Image 1: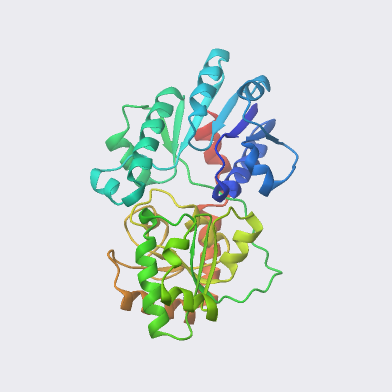
Image 2: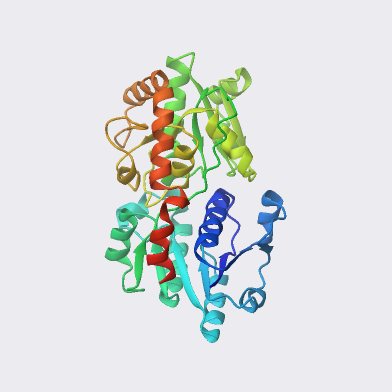
Length: 350
């Protein structure tokens, strides 16, 4: 079987997932090629089995038996039509199925963008042969709001390869926010805790690593002072390489994952891979992976209570060595691609 894994939209936070799908298909097919939007090349470089192109004719011309479409793009619609004309099977990984009106309101300023994405996702799902959903939470949303688009769907986790380098000794120092800085990811709630932490714990340091431009958020005296003193570290406004992102996870005591809405989370899987505990809630997929016994993180309620978040941070700080090991174990069981080869044969190949 010849498989084409395709991402026609540049999404730097998903580079590790794309490489994991490539590794997965190398175990269950005869040939696999990653066809990626050219902007990926800046961060991923030239690698065997990778082609940087937006040329749909080139993708179809490679004569794949299966085209595995990873993320949203209007160009996917043209690609799917071209595949259908050649009798090529298509599968689409739907990251965020449409949710309720209440969940939509959680998008805040991104609501128009989300409405557009919901429309495009619906069109793509109608055309492909099969839809993959990253969690049971995603499946429930899909069944409730989108199942008319395509009745052929299955749950398959947002896999990663194991990029943890145990030979590196890196000091864990920060309470971090890593990833898209948006209202749906509860960025404002995180910043409220940053203010609280700066005022109430002189030993607490924060890190924000995002491709989003957050200069507007940082233009406040308390943040400017923290940036100058080193208690707040910010890398923002540009995509980061996989190595750079991994370094930020390894520097973190814990990572914010208490999102207002999430049916999957690349941040959750990356944090666990790198042994970093997470602060989560039960609004999304994290409750399927994380236990309430504080093995690899802590649950908080939304809207959050800053006193309780501080207690969670202090607990994690105290138990970081044990929780790091637990996080790694959960990653291997729930997200590492090597654990899902047989499931992939059943769900994706058949």
